[in-house]
Amino acid sequence: MTTIEFIKLNRPERAAVLCELAEEFYLSGQRVIVMVKDDNQGVTLDRFMWTWKQGAFVPHVYDNGSVDCHDESVVIVAGEENPNGAEVLLMGAPCSNEFIRLFRHAIDFAEAFDEDRLEMSRERFKGYRENGFAPVMR
Image (tube, rainbow, N blue to C red; front, side, top):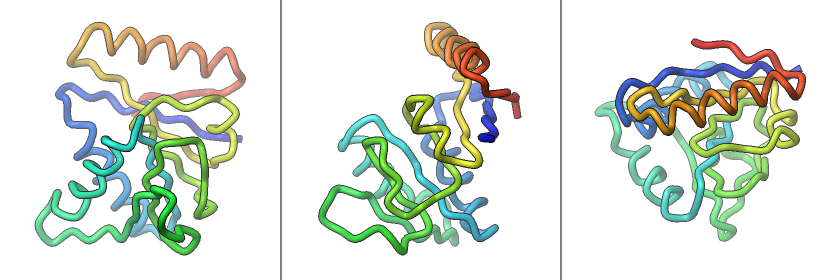
């Protein structure tokens, strides 16, 4: 069964947290998918992940269809696909329950810095429960 964790964000810092989590899972030997909402976010996160922290190295690729991603540890995607057979999903954008079920571990965000976004996070949390998941706050 998929474990879904919610991480509370008190500031709009999702990109940095996505990088930290990708690094954490990469260093533990796990393959990761980072979901973004569109190509613009994919390109932006791809560039940011190379420079986000001095001394950090997270080998990754943005799957824009022009590169082979099967051997990459961390893959950024803008659509619901898992080209590297990852077991970890980092949701930089919401995903369908069917897609989430393909992973052993999924992480979503409770964006407490904005009331509207926080309410959407609550709705996703509730929806996960209604669909048989047992989400937890981290």
